[in-house]
Image (cartoon, rainbow, N blue to C red; front, side, top):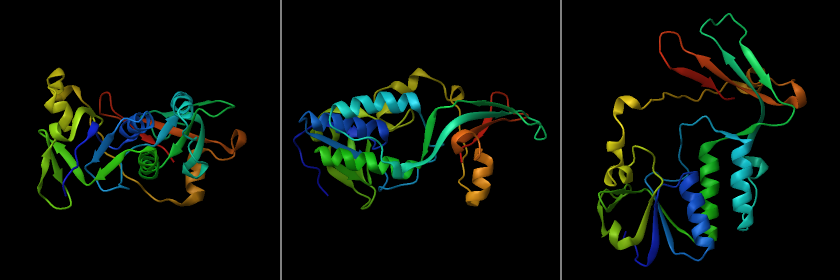
Length: 229
């Protein structure tokens, strides 16, 4: 695979930040190329909760450029409450509820794929299975170095591949923090069925809306867990 030249901007990472940026650039007639190291759609460890504030701010920006709301099919649950549990599992915990939604739950795999497709529809070029390292594009599918360097592929590179991504390393940003200053996360997805999920999420509360849980972890200073049904 050879990456064609002519792109003004190379966006590294097809998550929400990368795809949304590419959408806006493409809508403004800026030639933009997105590279994503995973083959889309891909699994993404994430709670999947989008706050109402984020929805409003992102929605107003995207709508002003002609992009639609998030389709209802992508919304897995509307969230109206938060439950905080202590280290004692026998305790009930503390709940906070709003009459109106405070956020929605989405599956990151489907949500990210939706945004990436919207970027392509706007005119961006998306190459998945392709990673950017040390100024070179590497093919995940073929296991070879692309014949175009990052500098040849675009005039501007936007890093949307996370704090530990290769663009942060190349830009020298990793020197801004120590590894011990960063947290780490372990996550798993468990299928428990609709009845159990509704019981955890608080179905039957105002409007049948859901709740997300945060759990304080005994013996782990500063650590916590969460359940986002």
